[in-house]
Amino acid sequence: MFSASTCPPVLPPADLVIDAAYGTGFHGSWDPPDVGDAAVLAVDIPSGVDGLTGHAEGAVLAADRTITFAALKPGLLFSPGAELAGELELADIGLEVPFAHAQLVQRDDVGRWWLIWRHWRSRARIAAILELCQERIGCLSHAHVHRCQVLTMAKVGEAFVGDL
Image 1 (cartoon, one colour):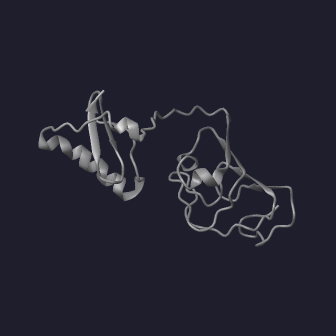
Image 2: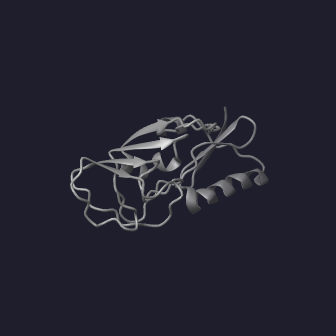
């Protein structure tokens, strides 16, 4: 067994490597060891992947399988974290986790919506959310903005608002 700080650059031959070096709160980069042909099981999230964004700075030890606890982390669902996690398994550890509601919006869905013009002040919330998307989030795929209206946008700076 090796810690992240004392791990040699090349691990001795093994059938399985368990990656538990860093968890969901990790920020930054690290140099993972060369594991050869060993299968890799990541604990919670592959070390080096940001648990909120899926972003990875530097090298990451790609997992064949990741076991995560209580709830799926966003970093396991967004690229490149999704590709680096391999097959996902969610383990129930008895925590009550409130579920977030999300919906995948695809290209065909957008064609059914239309832009609705409102009073100029009502567009402030759209501008604010667009700004968030351009700063760090990347893409906000669904947000309830007023009663039964839906706002859908991508980084390209286009917003579609329509009644449900």
